[in-house]
Every structure is written in C-alpha cells, then in structure tokens.
Image (cartoon, rainbow, N blue to C red; front, side, top):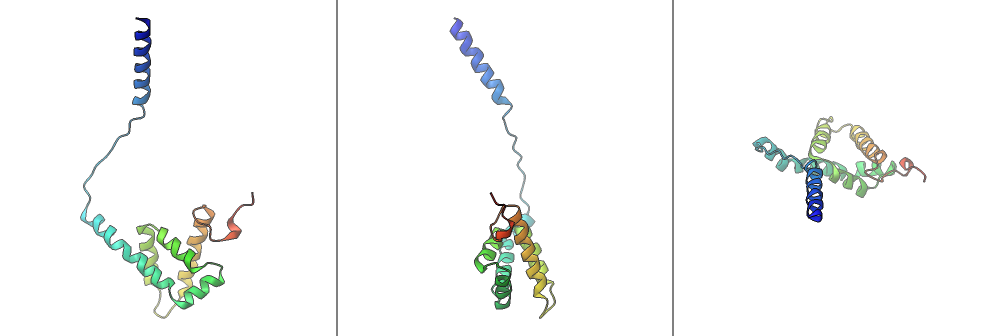
Length: 129
C-alpha cells in the first residue's frame, strides 16, 4: 500500500509541476490585406536585387569590401517589412540620381546586422577571442 501511495504522490507532483508549462494559443482570421502583403512582398526583394545588379552599385559595394553574393544573401534574409521599406526608399530616389544614399542604407543595414552577429560581412566587426 505504501508503494501505491508513493506512486500516486509522484504522479500528482509531476502533474502539478507540468501544469505550469502549458501554453496558450490564440487563433484569428487572416485579413485580405495580410495575404496580399505576403504575396506581393516578394516583389520588393526582386526590386532590391535588380538595384544590386547594376554595375555601378556592384562596383561601389566591392569598393567597400562587400561582395555581391553577401549583399544578395542579406537581401534574401530581410523580412517583408524591411524589404518594403528599403524598396520604397530606392523608389523615392531622384531619377538618374543618388545611388549613394541607397548604398549607404544597404551598408548601414549590413553593418548593423554584422554587429548583432546575424551576418559575417565585415571582418572589423568581429571580436577577437
């Protein structure tokens, strides 16, 4: 009888311990705007990659020490919101214009993600261990 009580108490302790680990789940309807943004969001990545494919942009990035493949990998890692922001900034540049602003923006994004440890583009941001 003693072993049955111990087993029962052990089972109760385990049950009460794991009750605190339950997770709640929320469900909601997905709006048409969210679906449309998810579908159209890929176009922003394509526009950014098209801007990166320009020869003067490639030359400027390589002069700063960023390879084309690294930049394209970072663009692929952007969320849809980040890509939309970057694409809108590229679209708002003057015609014929100031590619340097877009390049500085890409450089800053790459630098911040490198400092945060998400990418390994610039060797000067790595700590020596």
